[in-house]
Amino acid sequence: MIPHSRPTITENDIKSVSEVMRSGCIVQGEKVRQFEEKLASFIGVKGGIATSSGTSALHLALMVLGVGKEDEVILPTYVCTAPLNAIYYIGAKPILADINEDDFNISAMDVERKLTKKTRAIIVPHLFGLPADMKEILRLGIPVIEDCAQSIGATIRHPASGIRYPASGIWHPVGSLGALSICSFYATKLLATGEGGMVLSNDEELLSRIQDLRDYDEKDDFKVRFNYKMSNIEAAFGLSQLEKLPSFIKRRKEIARKYSSAFSGCDFSIPSVYENREHIFYRYVVRVHNKAGKFIDDIQNKGIECRRPVYKPLHHYLSCGDFPVADKVYKDAVSIPIYPSLSDEDVDYIIETVGGIS
Ligand SMILES: Cc1ncc(COP(=O)(O)O)c(C=O)c1O
Image 1: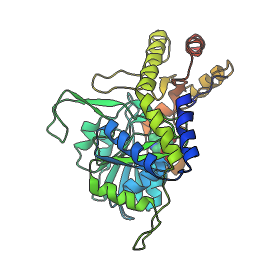
Image 2: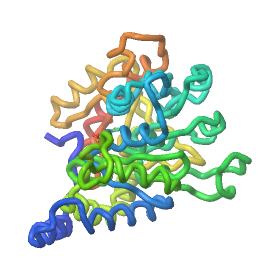
Image 3: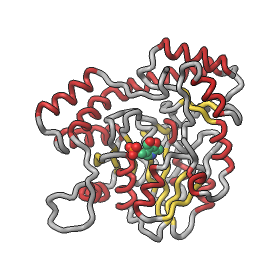
């Protein structure tokens, strides 16, 4: 069986982790500091604070933005439950928005419709490796948390806009445009540490508050703080993976190009390509018109594990509202294996099998 996703672990990762183990300095320390510095510089922001997961990173990001119990936070309905959990940790009210049919990302138009006086933040996941249209979202003037769990390393080109973007024509990494951004380094993410996350920002004041909240020990005052720390073991793994991230992304894009050229004549739709947004293919998602379940089963029977890219839209759990686009995408969308450690033989077999099934 070709698994749907799998981490790409090299001898160098094993060596980096072993060195930390041998040193005995296994808790949060120098390796964590280095990982924070290197990733912040990769994304092009002033700093990062490493955490135990993407979910804890989201929790801390919402806390330092001052989101409270009476406040509303807008998020797309078509995403995993992690951002929803983080909003409930705060006790705030989640407000779901529908997505765009073409890019699966949060619909700026629906967000605008759902703004109220109580809206304190918008969580914008860049889903499946494709950046969301940040220009339209930032225009709304509400603090944005960019959720880069699925898109670290992707870039956006900004036309001149007069908002708060840097100069026109430059490609900007996702995670450098919101008030804060978060990453996840879960085992099958673009960059893996097993479990782990980070909050990144240009705002040093917010970062120092996150640093304080991440750890409860040896503080002069008492307030509720967390044990959301990352260990040196995970950070050493992360540092070694970060060196390979550009080559990981190159391989993902190469596989995606092969899939798209092979599947262009098939009777399912392939991912759209955008001039101003770089897709780094965390997921390769095809649309099979109302038969995602059958398509997944048929391919599974031939030894390839495919998945629905989002397990269930959030409004299905909360039984609220009308989200026609997310419902349609949910019925159609199938994620096909794509990761750097897929061999050329695996890729060829996937092309032959998926292409033949439609
Ligand atoms: C879009 C998105 N946000 C947040 C998370 C949460 O990350 P973690 O599993 O590290 O808590 C995930 C993880 O799958 C995710 O896909």
